Picture 1 (tube, one colour):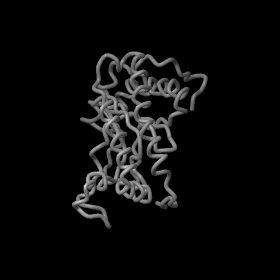
Picture 2 (cartoon, rainbow, N blue to C red):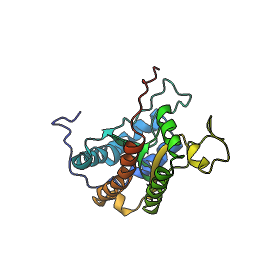
Picture 3 (tube, helix red, strand yellow):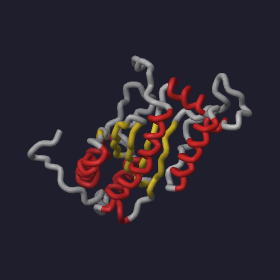
Length: 226
């Protein structure tokens, strides 16, 4: 929560020690490391991230900034801290996502974890020639602008009810429907120009959110209880 003691300043870029912080955390993801470097995290990562979220909210709506601590309750991976800083904005057709790590700045959009009924509808679209052609044009335009459909999250074989020799088997095997790009870190990351990189990227991937909303739509399933 923002208080009078912790005002959000204008975004001037991430601090010049932000990437070093995450390189160190990747090597030593421990409470000892975190406590020794928490001032670096606050000044070079957390405060700029909040300022960036405030600037982006004018165009995209208020982002959700994620906590740095990992939820270990249901995970076999017991590393206590996220090795990236991240935020997202919900959209009708999925979402907008940002993550800063030692690798650079990742920008993404779409369905990262689509529900089963969404995947079923997406797969049925592959047998509609007009919609499939429109999908191919949309994905080609996104890839040309540097945001291809991610290659992670594929079934090993055809989904149930589909043949392995289907001409669009690559899309049928998808279990994630997100487009993304990692922008390699450079001087812009530490300047106000960073917000322009994010805005431009989110505007691109938001066309994918719009396509998904128009052609696939939200899930109609009841949320699974944990």
